[in-house]
Image 1 (spheres, rainbow, N blue to C red):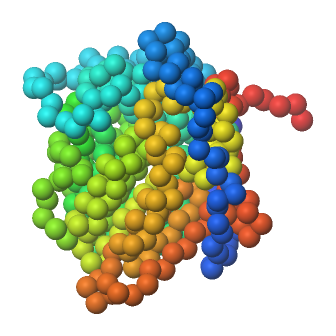
Image 2: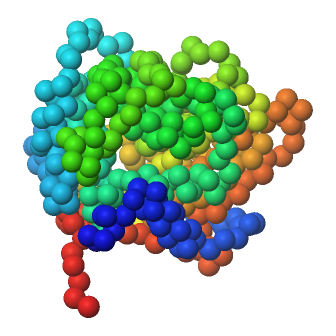
Length: 397
């Protein structure tokens, strides 16, 4: 691990990409039904009792702090400076007067252990730190560098699915948060002329803008933040509803949705997809990176109602998302010339859908699902920590 930490960023990315690709069996024409891998809908009297319990204040005060503590403990166990990084961003934030936010009702729900959801400074200060913890949980073998490995897995999946950005291309990052995905898009695609990020939270957008001005260095490089950020004039952030952007139709070459859809009611998720298609130029691409509840690892976790309740306690729409994945894929297929889905991790997928051109409206869509091998096994092994773990345990040789 110490040798790995000394490698250059370019070498780490190359080594990781090679490892991910080696884990995949390359088959050019593979379509496998995933119906047998999905956890069945959780219904019945026992489920109603659990739903009632989850809605109670007592259960909330038990589960939500536990879910948060798991994230903080994971960070600290892997050398991610949760507290000091939070104090740094908090002390460097220029607090602006944010008026009462005009947001849809669904967005006012409690999210991620915050009573005000994403509509508060606390969530904006911690979201990038928490993302590092998520990375460490998904790729524990990389420890404090798990976030880069995690997002690198999606870079690789999108590339395999055919993601391209033309010269002078324009990218829209829906649900950009504080700009983690937006900045990575800018870094990965220097040929793009514009990368815009839109989010409903004015707190997230404000922190995103301030981080670009502050240009902090990562703690891995002796700095005070969880990543190194360089200002980029091509990046623009604005507050808005991604389901109703009011932007001009057919102006973007790529619309990106990364870790957004699982936080939405199913009808809102479909509205975002419709809006993305409207904004894409003919031949443009929709990119989605998300949780995959058709993957055996997540299906097994969801089948255990008590175990799944720990995750669900801070993700109010997670069950809805899990049930609507197939409908969402069908909706995307109906609007696209081609759709390719690739397993990114043992629990996540990357999707690239290409918008039809006017003369292709009546032509059938090409749909390629590369998540499963011919024998029905998920193409990427699951490396995620167990719910009760915070760090990969060293095993005796």
